[in-house]
Image (cartoon, rainbow over all chains, first blue to last red; front, top):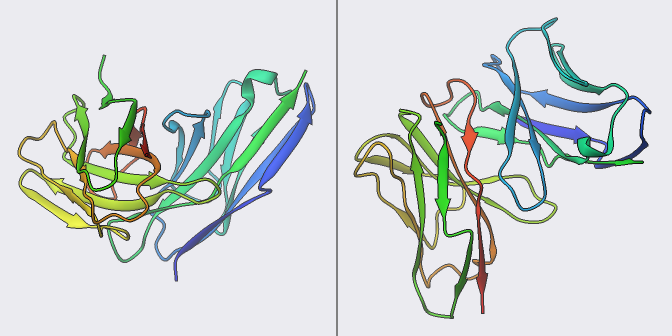
Length: 110
Length: 113
């Protein structure tokens, strides 16, 4: 069965303390892995799409990487405004549905 | 600016009432989706539509209904048959089904009184 697992569930960092969020997936024939940021009470905001192992994408303090089994969202020198829940998703291999992970709640302390 | 709008932002429903949540997009996307988000759970798919006048049930369609009469619009009705409707509802769209990233609206928070 296709699935997406994100870890850790929650992460607290001091400002400037770099870390990584993990998204593990099991799906046949990956047709993209998507990262989103979601602030409380708002809709998810699209960040990155990765299609093949070895691919990397960057945006400000965020860098997303992809292997054949997982994706990492690296946060370099985070700031309090990076605090949010980060979601990843993949299209299901057999249907047109997207499978979303439950997210990592990131809190960056000043 | 292109994007997805949802209204209202907050909605209160009494027991036994049907309510309709609005979703409009001007991205010229063919596919549209409705998700439900509950605390501690991932997004769960309610309904999706690949093209105008066509829609399919998702994983938790019971107690919900949709229509897709226009490409830009995909309203969701929460009926009185939905036993636990209090949740955050998200509408999304993509260029095609399972093709590329989905873009989300700001959400509607529905509370049953």
